[in-house]
Image 1 (cartoon, rainbow, N blue to C red):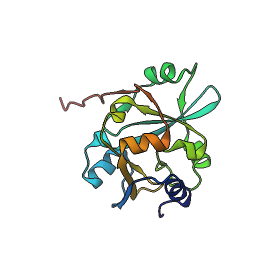
Image 2: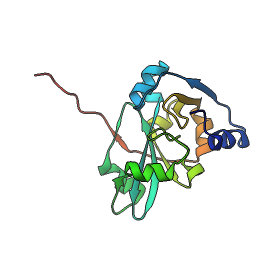
Image 3: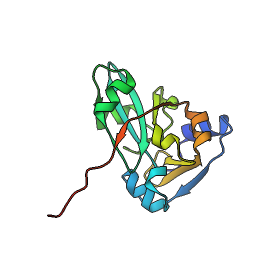
Length: 162
Protein backbone atom coordinates (compact mmCIF):
# COMPACT_ATOMS: atom_id res chain seq x y z
CA UNK A 1 0.00 0.00 0.00
CA UNK A 2 1.58 3.32 -1.00
CA UNK A 3 1.66 6.42 1.16
CA UNK A 4 -1.99 7.16 1.74
CA UNK A 5 -3.45 9.98 -0.31
CA UNK A 6 -4.76 11.48 2.89
CA UNK A 7 -1.30 11.63 4.45
CA UNK A 8 0.38 12.83 1.26
CA UNK A 9 -2.21 15.62 0.91
CA UNK A 10 -1.79 16.60 4.57
CA UNK A 11 2.01 16.77 4.29
CA UNK A 12 1.97 18.67 1.00
CA UNK A 13 -0.76 21.10 2.06
CA UNK A 14 1.27 21.93 5.17
CA UNK A 15 4.51 22.28 3.18
CA UNK A 16 6.11 19.61 5.37
CA UNK A 17 9.81 18.84 5.05
CA UNK A 18 10.02 15.06 5.13
CA UNK A 19 11.53 12.04 3.48
CA UNK A 20 9.81 8.74 2.81
CA UNK A 21 11.56 5.39 2.92
CA UNK A 22 10.49 1.87 2.09
CA UNK A 23 11.66 -1.27 3.89
CA UNK A 24 10.68 -4.93 4.22
CA UNK A 25 7.46 -5.43 6.20
CA UNK A 26 7.82 -4.58 9.88
CA UNK A 27 4.91 -4.89 12.28
CA UNK A 28 6.22 -3.40 15.52
CA UNK A 29 7.88 -0.06 16.12
CA UNK A 30 11.05 -1.87 17.23
CA UNK A 31 11.06 -3.85 13.96
CA UNK A 32 10.65 -0.57 12.05
CA UNK A 33 13.66 0.85 13.91
CA UNK A 34 15.73 -2.19 12.95
CA UNK A 35 14.55 -2.14 9.32
CA UNK A 36 15.32 1.59 9.06
CA UNK A 37 18.65 1.30 10.92
CA UNK A 38 17.52 3.92 13.41
CA UNK A 39 17.77 4.10 17.18
CA UNK A 40 14.45 2.95 18.67
CA UNK A 41 14.26 6.20 20.66
CA UNK A 42 13.69 8.11 17.35
CA UNK A 43 10.96 5.83 15.99
CA UNK A 44 7.43 6.67 17.06
CA UNK A 45 5.09 4.02 18.35
CA UNK A 46 1.53 5.20 17.77
CA UNK A 47 -0.98 3.95 20.35
CA UNK A 48 -4.66 4.84 20.28
CA UNK A 49 -6.52 4.86 23.57
CA UNK A 50 -10.19 5.32 24.41
CA UNK A 51 -11.14 7.24 27.51
CA UNK A 52 -14.12 9.24 28.73
CA UNK A 53 -15.98 8.64 25.47
CA UNK A 54 -13.21 9.81 23.08
CA UNK A 55 -10.21 8.40 21.24
CA UNK A 56 -6.75 9.88 21.78
CA UNK A 57 -3.43 9.27 20.01
CA UNK A 58 -0.41 8.61 22.19
CA UNK A 59 3.00 8.80 20.49
CA UNK A 60 5.95 7.30 22.33
CA UNK A 61 9.46 6.06 21.46
CA UNK A 62 9.62 2.49 20.10
CA UNK A 63 12.02 1.67 22.93
CA UNK A 64 9.41 2.36 25.63
CA UNK A 65 6.05 1.06 26.83
CA UNK A 66 2.90 3.05 27.53
CA UNK A 67 2.47 3.46 31.27
CA UNK A 68 -1.29 3.41 31.75
CA UNK A 69 -0.81 4.62 35.34
CA UNK A 70 0.56 7.81 33.76
CA UNK A 71 -1.78 8.07 30.75
CA UNK A 72 -5.02 8.55 32.68
CA UNK A 73 -3.86 11.54 34.76
CA UNK A 74 -1.65 12.97 31.97
CA UNK A 75 -4.62 13.06 29.59
CA UNK A 76 -7.03 14.14 32.34
CA UNK A 77 -9.22 11.05 31.92
CA UNK A 78 -11.20 9.19 34.55
CA UNK A 79 -10.82 5.90 32.66
CA UNK A 80 -8.69 4.70 29.74
CA UNK A 81 -8.14 1.57 27.67
CA UNK A 82 -6.40 0.68 24.42
CA UNK A 83 -8.54 0.89 21.28
CA UNK A 84 -9.49 -2.49 19.84
CA UNK A 85 -8.42 -3.69 16.39
CA UNK A 86 -12.00 -3.24 15.18
CA UNK A 87 -12.01 0.36 16.42
CA UNK A 88 -8.63 1.04 14.77
CA UNK A 89 -9.95 -0.31 11.47
CA UNK A 90 -12.85 2.14 11.63
CA UNK A 91 -10.74 5.11 12.77
CA UNK A 92 -8.02 4.56 10.13
CA UNK A 93 -9.76 2.96 7.14
CA UNK A 94 -7.00 4.03 4.74
CA UNK A 95 -4.21 2.43 6.79
CA UNK A 96 -2.99 -1.09 7.36
CA UNK A 97 -3.98 -2.25 10.85
CA UNK A 98 -1.44 -0.98 13.35
CA UNK A 99 0.42 1.24 10.87
CA UNK A 100 -1.40 4.51 11.45
CA UNK A 101 0.70 7.66 11.06
CA UNK A 102 1.44 9.71 14.18
CA UNK A 103 -0.60 12.69 12.94
CA UNK A 104 -3.90 12.28 14.71
CA UNK A 105 -5.29 15.63 13.60
CA UNK A 106 -5.89 14.11 10.16
CA UNK A 107 -8.32 11.74 11.86
CA UNK A 108 -9.82 14.13 14.40
CA UNK A 109 -7.68 12.85 17.28
CA UNK A 110 -5.73 14.86 19.81
CA UNK A 111 -2.07 13.82 19.81
CA UNK A 112 -0.10 13.37 23.03
CA UNK A 113 3.66 13.18 22.43
CA UNK A 114 5.86 11.69 25.11
CA UNK A 115 8.40 14.18 26.42
CA UNK A 116 11.35 11.84 25.79
CA UNK A 117 10.51 11.59 22.07
CA UNK A 118 9.78 15.31 21.91
CA UNK A 119 13.40 15.94 22.88
CA UNK A 120 14.88 13.88 20.03
CA UNK A 121 16.24 15.76 16.99
CA UNK A 122 14.42 13.52 14.49
CA UNK A 123 11.32 11.35 14.40
CA UNK A 124 10.18 8.53 12.13
CA UNK A 125 6.69 7.02 11.96
CA UNK A 126 4.61 4.64 9.88
CA UNK A 127 3.06 6.15 6.77
CA UNK A 128 -0.10 4.04 6.86
CA UNK A 129 1.59 0.79 5.86
CA UNK A 130 4.01 -1.70 7.39
CA UNK A 131 6.57 -0.85 4.68
CA UNK A 132 6.74 2.96 4.45
CA UNK A 133 8.09 5.40 7.00
CA UNK A 134 8.00 9.19 7.16
CA UNK A 135 11.16 10.85 8.52
CA UNK A 136 11.35 14.47 9.65
CA UNK A 137 12.88 16.77 12.18
CA UNK A 138 10.99 16.58 15.46
CA UNK A 139 10.47 20.35 15.37
CA UNK A 140 8.74 19.94 12.00
CA UNK A 141 6.62 17.09 13.36
CA UNK A 142 5.58 19.22 16.32
CA UNK A 143 4.57 22.02 13.94
CA UNK A 144 2.42 19.63 11.91
CA UNK A 145 0.90 17.42 14.59
CA UNK A 146 0.44 20.12 17.25
CA UNK A 147 0.88 17.53 20.02
CA UNK A 148 0.44 18.04 23.71
CA UNK A 149 3.75 17.12 25.37
CA UNK A 150 3.36 14.80 28.36
CA UNK A 151 5.25 12.04 30.20
CA UNK A 152 3.70 8.70 29.28
CA UNK A 153 6.28 5.92 29.29
CA UNK A 154 8.24 3.43 31.31
CA UNK A 155 11.17 1.16 30.56
CA UNK A 156 10.33 -2.37 29.37
CA UNK A 157 10.90 -5.01 32.05
CA UNK A 158 14.03 -7.03 31.32
CA UNK A 159 13.38 -10.74 30.79
CA UNK A 160 15.92 -13.01 32.44
CA UNK A 161 16.67 -16.54 31.31
CA UNK A 162 17.30 -17.71 34.86
